[in-house]
Image: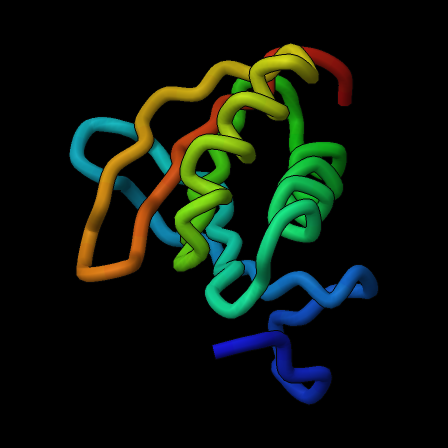
Length: 104
């Protein structure tokens, strides 16, 4: 499942985002579906999405590329954000929850 330019929630970066409510006890402000993308695209799209968010907001990133499960959290932590959770949610599908820590 990749980016579809005709998707109503696709932005100028080719990022599919939605606004889901809560995930367990963590408020999710945006969701980024990166199934079908590989590194470093998964990190770049996650970083661009966080740049558009406010400090304290949480981004849920869905990935199906195993390399992204370690690379995206490591790179976003290096950028100064807080990784709240990384976990498998289905076979070959993981979620990464990231809180934006700095900037507007």
